[in-house]
Length: 113
Image 1: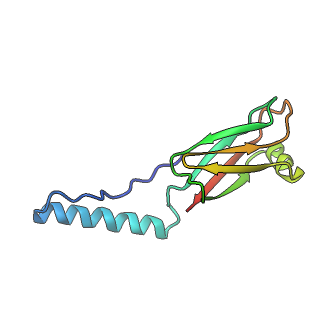
Image 2 (image 1 turned 90 degrees about the vertical axis):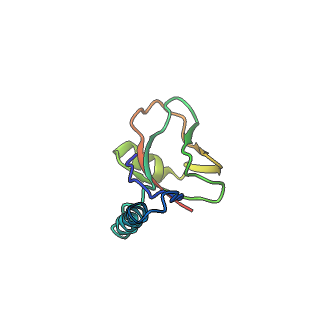
C-alpha cells in the first residue's frame, strides 16, 4: 500500500511557526489529492484452495465503495467469471471467489468512502 502523509488534525502549536507548518502540511495534502495521490489504494492476492479471502484495511467501512483491478492474467480470469463479490464491514471485507489452486490472482484495489 502506498502511503502519502496527511496533515495533523490537532495544531496544538499555536505559535506563528507552528501555524505556518500546519498550513504548509494542509496545503501539501490538498495538492497531493488534486494529483490523485489520495492514499486509498492497496494490493491483495486471493487465497488459493479457498473460496474466500479476508482483506483487512482500517480505511474500509461498511459503506465503502471498493474497486478491484486485476494485475495478473489469472486475476483477470477470476474477475471475468462473475464469481467474485464481497461484503464490507468496518476495517475489513470478505471477498468470495472461486475455490481453486491458482496462486497469483492479485488485484490492486481502491477504497472510496
